[in-house]
Structure formats: structure tokens, C-alpha cells
Image (cartoon, rainbow, N blue to C red; front, side):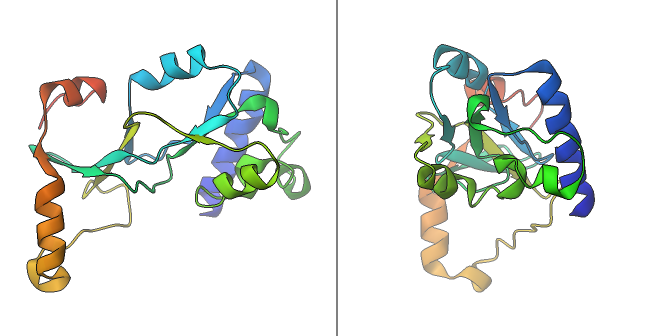
Length: 174
């Protein structure tokens, strides 16, 4: 995790140079919607968004799961006017940056506490992929482990992946 946060800090130093309108950290195992950049561009005055609705997808599967309680490392998009960029990689400088100080699970409440709340993104903005070698999660989909209620909930949210979804998230093969 030390390596990950150091790389994110280096990315923030680079972002300071190029001055983007928004910042979003993306995990290697997540895919983002093609709609995201156009939406952010059209809403430049927004504080930013949290992705609350997304998908879960086992790499290579022809099926995708709707996720209406989305939580992953790629879920917060912040307007850069709300960010203090680090000046260097010194821990004191890095600690001043909200994106680096707060993890993805705490950015939303921290921004609300500061009076700059994030809104829910109005579309499914990301896909959390699993069983791809990039994440720690290995889903055990056995009914014995999770039970009948889990299986019924999963069946209600499981869908064949549509061509439009593959195109939106740049998935070339299933």
C-alpha cells in the first residue's frame, strides 16, 4: 500500500502541472464509463461526484451484475478547485491533499463536512472487475457459503452483458 500511495502522490504532482478540471483515482481492476469525461466537462462547476451505481464483472464472463451500492477504489471524482496539491513527496505536503489524506471510503463524508458535498453520478459510472489478478478479492460464488437469500439477490441483479455496455466500458471480449 505504501507503493500505491506514493504513486498516487506522484500522479498528483503531475496533475498540478497540467491543471485538470477534475481528479479521479482509478484502480487497475476498474473500468470507467465513456460518458464520464463528457459529463464532467458539461458540469465544470460541480464539486464532483460519487459513483453509487455501477457494475461488478468477473473478467471474461458474458454476465454482469448491477450494483446499486457501489464501493470500490474508483468511486470519487473531485473538482480540482477543492484540492490542495502537494508541493513534493514529503509526508507533510502530501497530508494537505484531500485526495491523498482520505481513502475512497472517507472522501465523500469529508467533502460534505467541508461544505462542498459530492453528488451521486446520475449513471452507472464504473465496473469493478474481479478474478483478474489485480485485486485482493476472490469471490466465492458457492451457494453454500452465502446462502439462498444471497443467491436470489444475485439472480435478480445478474444480466447478460449487452453490446452497448461492452462499448461504453471498452470491453472487447467476453
